Length: 385
Figure 1: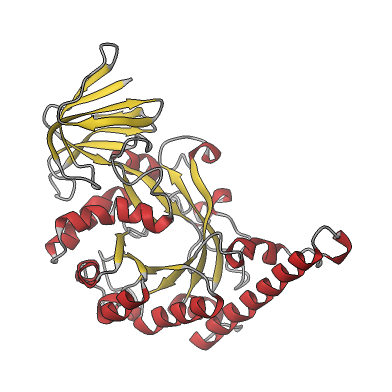
Figure 2: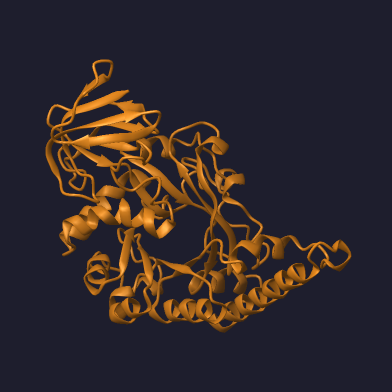
């Protein structure tokens, strides 16, 4: 058993504990509070008055799939040969030994949702991983996590260059409806066949990969920046009864009330950096705060490597600077992110029974002067400065 003592604890799902302790055993949080008994046999980590947070969570990035300090050889984000590639799996393109994974972990970003990019209308499946380890199979929390779909400029640009559909937003939407319709029919054929193998449809790898979506076991992860693309994503999801998250949601602040009425879940970012294309014209760090105040559940992301994954808490700090409530910003990189990804039973808050993923900071992680002092993943100290 490990006991972290003399700590200011931010559970996220409960009030701050000004001076408390956390008990960790067998990779899980056992107990926390201001006045708890510390077993005699416990290994003591004296936090020295530092602040303890849940491990931070990036709900959308491409870490480990677009490697650092290398070009094409390390770029495994987009299979740009076919606009429909649902059978691509992040687990097969992830390099856990890329330096950016280690840097993220040492900064306290202990969970990342990573997966295919936005070149294709249907790109493949995301997964959620811990950022500590050397074999991806042992780092996975959930796979598949979600099916990546994409709207707007990126699919248009990629396939316009190839002279094939989709060259327009209409084309992207048409492909999605066509493929989802086929997947629903494929599922119905399988269900009707029952135990009679002779009645099963011919095997189709694309349709098989979409079965978790049409069976509503995983959501769609919709890349959509512009307001019209956001509405198209919601429209198509509603037509098929699919759940989805709105990833990037760059113009979400322009339609905040509409999104709140739909119960949409938004993963905002990357808000830092140059407005590199037209659909980013209205990019601003004000977006997550405006959406949160409207009642939308918000997470903040880096889209790593667009913004380094290790800077996730700083991105939350930039949102605070732009008007977001600080408690909401912390939730946006912890509990909200976990709930949006469906991982709240394991991560996202310092709660008994959850994974002992936590970080201890000198200073405020949302400030440039904040500095990670210790990181724990699954109850193991994986970094100490």
